Every structure is written in structure tokens, then in C-alpha cells.
Image 1 (tube, rainbow, N blue to C red):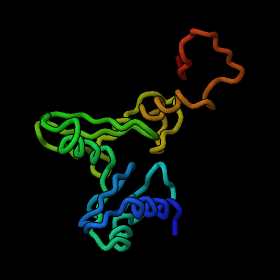
Image 2 (tube, rainbow, N blue to C red; image 1 turned 120 degrees about the vertical axis):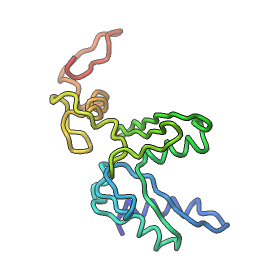
Image 3 (spheres, rainbow, N blue to C red; image 1 turned 60 degrees about the vertical axis):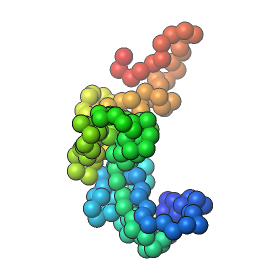
Image 4 (cartoon, rainbow, N blue to C red; image 1 turned 135 degrees about the vertical axis):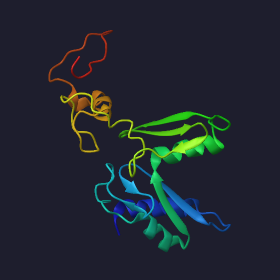
Length: 170
């Protein structure tokens, strides 16, 4: 069994309630097809290319299982149950190993690009930045994430106390 799937199901098992469960929904980054339940690829788990996560979860737990873009599901959760409840327009950004976004506009869920959601970090900004986890060089996501990585500091750079943080290209 694939290690990431084994770890995921171990986590689900640890919180599985005694009462019946009808549906599982997994929030996934990267290109996916929410209608077939297949992850086309995800930047964080390279082995999950054309991975039938919804089918595997449905079989293991004997319930309906769905997958959706992580940022889209996050904005829906906030709109229905969290800080966005009662609001008509919401922009939700996820910033971690990439930059994603979910949008509610005029009380309507805006799914964004098919299979990708809003891809807030996928806007092309500068060709000098590294390749993003999505595979494209110079996206906003690659630039934002690159700035904080130690390996991107110039060699033998001394930074005097009180100086601004070094950012690539500045």
C-alpha cells in the first residue's frame, strides 16, 4: 500500500466516530477531477498521479467519498460554518506549499478553473524565480515560497543586524 495513503487512512481511523458516517470528502491540492474522484497530480505527493483517492476511500470505509480542491472546500466551510457565515462575498487564500484560493461571490460559490480551483499562486510574475510545485517557473507561488528557503540565500552573505530580509531579485 502506498505510504501517504496508509498514513491518511490511519489518521481517518483515529477519528472515526461510533455513529454512522455517510460521506467522506478529502480536500486535495493540485489538479484533480472532483467528478471522477481522481487526483491528476498533487505537488506534495508525487506518487499520487492519476490516483483514484475517492474510490479507494469509498471501498475502505464503505461510504460515499469525494475529493475537491483544498482552497475551494476551505472557503465553503468558512462560508457555511465559520468566519464567513452570513457574508455574501469571500476570498479565501491558502498559503503553504503553494498558494491557492477559493471565492464566494454574491452568495454563489465560484469553483474557479476546472480541476484547479482559483490557483491564486499560478500567476506568472518573474522568470528568474524557481520552478513552483505546480511545475511552472516564475509563478507568484514560487517567488513567495522561494524567499523563505535557506538554500536560496547567496553564498557567504553577511547580513548586518537591522537590515531588511533578503528577497531574491531585490
